Image 1 (tube, rainbow, N blue to C red):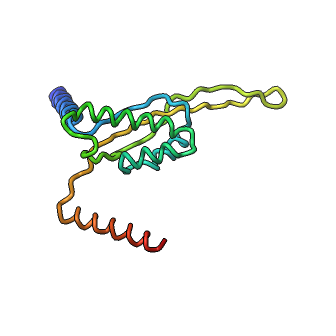
Image 2 (spheres, helix red, strand yellow):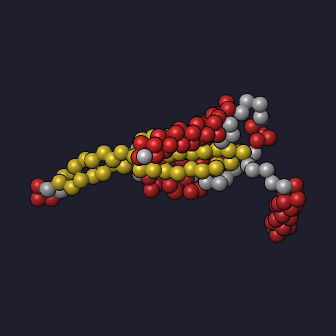
Image 3 (cartoon, rainbow, N blue to C red):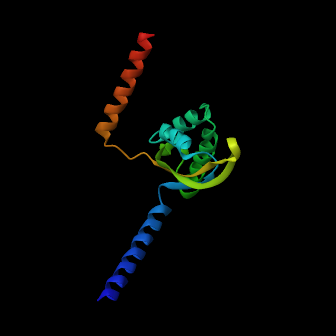
Length: 165
């Protein structure tokens, strides 16, 4: 009885993994950056800036951000874009309207070092690293009525800011 459950569970897992792999072949492009020698807390600040943004805006944010992890994140985003282009060779990048679907930062390995302290003691220094996962995908298609409404709102907001100047 238990062996049957185990077998059913392993078959279900295998089918689920197969479905995930098939979904990964088409559409979104996921890239990974492991063991980046920056604390996860600092990298999460950068990840929060670009999450959900269009790719062009995210690249501009990363290019002009003063924090040092933004250079690594920019390279990772460029890698995700080129990976998406390789998967979707038939679609032009300008027409694709890509955005950063998800980006998350996990803790990596920690190098433990000792720093001399007063009276012959030693304090432990933890040099942290992180793992970054970034996914780029096409903007979901909106119904025509909603899209037209959004474009009107954008135009009206641009016009009001220009007239205020």
